[in-house]
Structure formats: structure tokens, C-alpha cells
Amino acid sequence: MPLLIVLIGVLILIFLIIKLKLNTFVSLVVTSFIVALLLQIPVTKIPTTIESGIGSQLGHLAIIFGFGSMLGSLVSEAGGGYRIATTLINKFGRRWIQVAVILASFIIGLALFFEVGLVVVLPIIFIIARELDMPLMYLGVPMAATLNVTHGFLPPHPAPTAITEVLHAQLGHVLLLGIVVSIPTIIIAGPLYNWALQKLYPKVYRKNIDISVLGEYKEFKLADTPGFGISVLTAMMPVILIAIATICSFVLPSKNLVNQVIQFIGAPDFAMLLSMLIAVFTMGIFRQKNMKEISDIMVSSVKSISMMLLIIGGGGAFKQVLVDGGISKYVSALFSSTNLSPIFAAWLITAILRVSLGSSTVSGITAAGLLAPMAEQYAPGSAMPALMVLAVGAGSIFCDHVNDAGFWMIKEYFGLSLKETLLSWTTLTIVISLAGLAAVYTLSLFV
Image 1: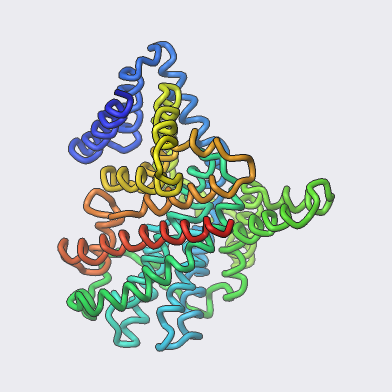
Image 2 (image 1 turned 90 degrees about the vertical axis):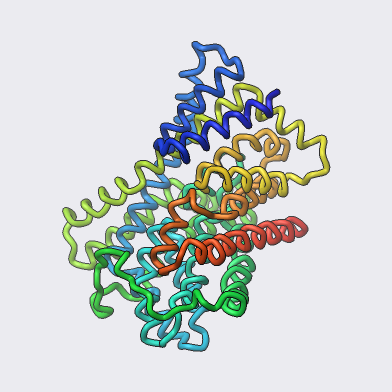
């Protein structure tokens, strides 16, 4: 009966989002109320459950997302993303052009959401592909694969950061292990998949692609953009600070004064704040922008993520209903009595939700709510919750299709038909997901 109620809830959510085209946040809240009634949570306690779910889910995540969005916008508006991409591409040359695209996409993808990163990088590789007389897809596949991997696996992106919070994993662990997992996943889903797709389905590798669907694009002169070093340093600053703090937590005594200072600076909230303030100078003031221009960029960036924050909060409400209604413990007990590993269970639940709902963020957070009691069985500091976060991330990428906005962006930007998008992009997301799962499994043998 508990699983039937979960199924009914998911079906209601799918119906509201896909069939009725209701806003995702509203759909999540409506579904949460209905499931709460079915689980016989006292009527007077349901609003409190919904409110606590939204509040606890957002919490300090709003700080990380807000500062992260501001940082990414400052780097993008100053031309830092353009400088990173063009410099790497020029240095690597034609033979290693895919490696250059992957490195540029990885660095930019750490600072920008998938859709934003796509809009920033795509015009650049379109110009490079035209100059080198290459099909746009040849560079587009490794670019999109890399952006998708960073979006699904690595904090401070919304889904992995929120899932880390739900599963009580350490953000530094998720970040470091996520980078390790990302490397083989990108290699498989980027150059190797690109080679196979070009052999098996060459018709999508066309050269006459119209980029006009991108709309207005801000043109940059390379001489007017920030330097390569400062652009990379600014974009990667949160990752650098959090990674240093995580490494020092293992090698320095916890009561060591130097370690305590490093842990303070490398705490996610402060790391994002400090990185954003650095970007204000490196990408703003030092680029002769006044504070009014800088503030406008920051305000605009927060507006762009406001709905995403609400969706994450709605996912938290649904998760809290499942927890207060006893579903999470039931599912945890159910999986504990099977031979399924926590890693595969995390991937499987998320992959099913992803195919059904379309949104990687919603499917990841919903799955995390079901998996939370399972993760709580592990001792603090254990690597398993972090590995489960990465498994959820891999599952949230699985089989992107017509119920996700990213699918249609890829279709339009690369000039593909619906069939071509399904055979190329949807297949790519399946490869990313399975390669990520395999990488997480392999890593679990060593940590």
C-alpha cells in the first residue's frame, strides 16, 4: 500500500506537469498535499509539513545558488567564458580540438547552469567549427556531454548540492569524488561516443547549421575580455576553496588553528560569497564597470534562478511528506532486505523518475527523499552517502527526452529533427548515465 501511494503521487505529478502543463512548483505542492492526505497525515499538520519541507530544503542552498548564479553571470557578461573557450581552442589546435572544447566546457560548466553554459559556449564553437570546416555536432557532442556531467554531478550546481544536503553527505567529498567520476564519464560520453555516433549515424554531422535560434548574442573582441588566467581562476574559485578545505580536513588536525581558518574559508556558503566578491572585482570593477552595472547583472542572474529555487523547494515539500508519512523508512527497509546495493538503488529510483518527470532536479531531489533513511545508516564522514549522491546524479541524467526543456534546446540549437534528437541526444544522456554509474561503482571499490 505505501508503494502504491508513492506511485499514485508520481503519476499525479506526471499528469499535472505533462498533460495539464501546470507549473512544476505548483504541481509539486499540489501533489504533496494529495499524497499527504493519502498517507493519512493529520490535516492540521499537512501545512506545517509542506512549509518545513520547503524551508529545510532551501535553507542555505538559496545562498549557494544565489551567489553561484551571480558569479556565473559576472564571468559570462565580462567575456570570461569567451576568453576561456577561445584560448583553449587556439592552444590545442585542430587535432585536439575536442579536448579543448571539453576543458573549456568543464571550466565554464562549473560556474554556469547547463542551459546557460550551452548558450555561452555554443556560439563560440559554432564560429570555430565554421573556421575549421567541421560539423557543429563534432564539437557540440563533447561540449553538451561535459556541461551535462558538471550539471548532474558537481556542486555548486542545484541538483547535486540539494541532494548532498538531503542525504547528509559532505559537500567537499561529493565535489572531489564527483571530479574523479566525471573524468571517465566525459571521456566515454564525449570523444568515444562522438566517434561511434559519427560512424553509425553520420547524417546529423552537418555543416550548414543556422545559429539564429540563439537569438541576440553578445559579441566580444578578444582584446576586450579578461585574461585567461584570471577568468579560469574566477570561474573555479568556489571549487578551489572547497577542495582545499576538504583536503586539509584529512591531513591537518581538526583543532589546528590554520585548519580551522581554512575550513571557515572553504565552507560552501562562505566560499561562494568570497568567490562572488572576487568576481565583482575581477569581472566588474577591474573591467571598468560601475557598481550600478554590476548590481544589474547580479539582480538579473537571481531572477533567472528564482523559479528553479521554487522547484527545489517544492521537491523538498514532496520529500518531507514522504518522510513524515513513513514512506522513506518503508522504502529504505524494503531495499535493505534486497541484494540491491545502495548505489544501484539510488541510480534506479532516480532514473525511473527522470524518464517520467523530465526534470533532473525534481527527479534527483524526489529520489533523495526516498533514499535519505538508507544514507543515514552510514557513519558521519563515510564515503557512501557521497557515492549515493553521485549515483542519484547519474540517474538524473538518464534518457533526456521530449518532456525536458534541455531536449528542445539541443534540437533547435543543432538544427536536428525530432527523430535525430532522440537518436543522438537522448542516446547520449543514456550513455552519460550508465558511464557515470559504472564510474561510481568502480570508485566505491577504492574509497
